[in-house]
Image 1 (cartoon, rainbow, N blue to C red):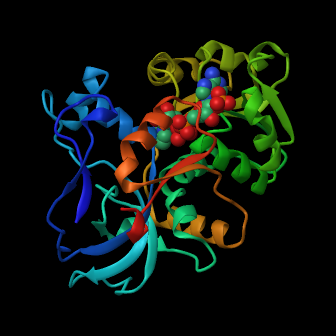
Image 2 (image 1 turned 180 degrees about the horizontal axis):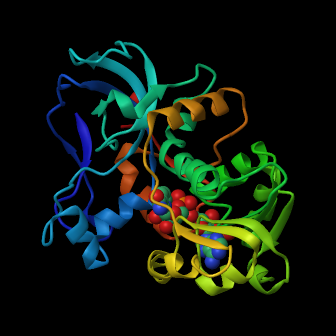
Image 3 (image 1 turned 120 degrees about the vertical axis):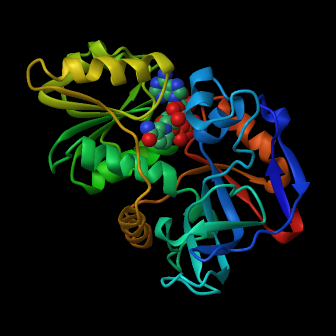
Length: 324
Ligand SMILES: NC(=O)c1ccc[n+]([C@@H]2O[C@H](COP(=O)([O-])OP(=O)(O)OC[C@H]3O[C@@H](n4cnc5c(N)ncnc54)[C@H](OP(=O)(O)O)[C@@H]3O)[C@@H](O)[C@H]2O)c1
C-alpha cells in the first residue's frame, strides 16, 4: 500500500510517498481503508521535531521514532481483530489513529465512532482532533454556560472554526477574532461579533468575556487576563511557544489571585466525545470548514500550507483510487 513516511526531522521535503506492507489488525484493532485524513499542526510539529524538548517528550532525539504522520482518519472497516465488538467489516468510521496518511491503517475501537451516513468522509476526517480540542476547551476547562460571553481567538483555523460553532450551540454569545480575509467566514459559522485582529486589539478594547478560548494565542497571558470578567476563564489550546509556556507556568499562579482562572488545555481523545461529535455532525450543529483538499501524494504540500499558519478551517487529504 502507499503511505507517507519520514525518517529524518525537517521541512515537508522529508516526506516520502512509499510503497510499504499493508498492516494486519491486531486482536484489539480494526483495519481501515482510509478514504480521507486531515492534517493537524501536531503533524508538522512532530515532523519538524522542534523545539528540541518535544523530541525528549516523544522519544527520538536524533531520528524520529514516529515515522508515519496522520492522526485524523475517516474510512471503511476492512477487517476487525477478534476482541473488537463495536464494529464490523463494511462500517464507515471516523476517529484517531497513528499513520493516517496511508491507504490503510490500524486503529483501536475506543477512539473511533461510526460516521453519520449523511456526512462525507472528508467532512468526517476534518473533525476528530480539532473538534475534540474545541469541545473540551469550552465544556470541560471553560465551563461554558448558556448566555456566557465567549471570545474565540484564532477563530478561523481548524480548532477555532469548531469552537465558534460549538460555543453557539451551547447558547453563548460569541466573539470571533481573526484576520480581515476570514471575517466573512467567522460570521457565516455563527459568530455574533467578529474582531479583525489586524485592525483592533481586543485585549485593549475594555470589553470583558466570561470565557476566552485561545485556539491560537498570540497575546501575553496578562493581556488575556485583563480581558476576562471577574470570574472569567482563559483556556489556552495552542499558538506561540511563549504563550504555551506562560499558560503552563504562570497560569496556575495567576489563578490563585482573585477569581479568574487561566489554564492550558491538553485535549484527550475520548470515545464519548467522538460519539457526541457524531451527533452534532449528523444534525448539522457543526459543519466542518474545509479550506483545501490534496491527494495523498501531495501530503507535503498540504502540510506546507497548514504550517504557514493561515488555513481557513481544515486541510484534508482525499484518497480516491484514481488520485493516488
Ligand atoms: N492543546 C491541545 O490539546 C491541542 C490540540 C489540537 C491543537 N492544538 C494547537 O492549537 C493550535 C491551533 O490549531 P489549529 O488546528 O486551529 O491550527 P491552524 O488551523 O493551523 O490555525 C490557523 C489559523 O490561525 C489563525 N491565526 C494565525 N495567527 C493569528 C493571530 N495572530 N491571531 C489570531 N488568529 C491567528 C489563522 O487565522 P488568520 O489567517 O485569520 O490569521 C488561521 O485561520 C495549534 O497551535 C495546535 O498545535 C492544541
